[in-house]
Amino acid sequence: MRGAFHESGNDWTPSASFETLHLRARLNATMRSFFAARGVTEVETPVMSMAGNTDPNIASFHLHFSGRTDGAPRTRWLRTSPEYPLKRLLAAGFGDCYELGRVFRDGEAGGRHNPEFTMLEWYRLGWDHMRLIDETAELVQAALALVGRTAALQRVSYHQLYRDRLGIDPATASIDELRVALGDVVIDPSGLTRDDWLDLLMTHRLQPSFPADQLLAVYDYPASQCALARVRHDATPVAERFELYLGPLELANGYHELADATEQGARFDRDLQVRQERGDIQPPRDERLLQALAAGFPACAGVALGVDRLMMAMLGSGHIADVLAFDFPRA
Picture 1 (spheres, rainbow, N blue to C red):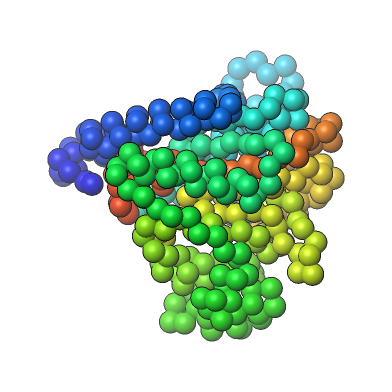
Picture 2 (cartoon, rainbow, N blue to C red):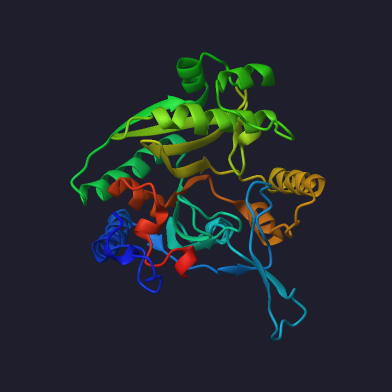
């Protein structure tokens, strides 16, 4: 979709075409209408927080506030997602809600990544991740209709996907077996965990083969990849989460949300231990989120969807710059 605005020397001009920017506006309106029809309320939550994201695989920006703080920390963290404040609203009794807004991740810039990007995140009380798959797919299908496209939804469990496509059981395969399954993909193995090898198989062997006009929901991940999802203790424990793909692009990541404050605190601490071992920055835990969970968090499911990724998928583009008014090099 790159056009007249990409000539050399014109880096003051938009990186996306006007047509694409008008399409983004229609997409925003479609998403808001989608949730209004379902009684899900739009909210706005802080972009700067006293707490950061502890996930070892996500780097947060932070800044120093020079004004009056009344004893509060001057260091603030730009959100990587609106998840924590949205969950505080849920714990307070607000009900089904969503936020459409900018989020920030350090170190993520390139063909498919921009350090600031748009995320849509929403929560549904009384739902699990399997029910939320359907609504997420319906939203993506409504977006595709804006460009005259359709995509049917298929579901597959994480374990079944690896068994059917790669001939391995992700719950029991050794690291050596996972490395062999990568085939001719050359990766430096230094410091890689078992979950890292599973992720590499997803990104290098599985995703590239997903059909372009298919919505694929992969659900019930290994318990070791639970993030903020509940773990279901089957014969082989699984994390009750899903990821939704349109063709090879991952669009959304959803959870049957963890409601246990003690377990969530322990997960934060495990994240920080990994960060310490790597020599990475250790953001403060979100103690207010833990207090909210302890106060009585409702059973619910939530999902985050990358709006820029959705735009890329709608237009068949491999460059995030094509869907941004001004990408990182032009910001």
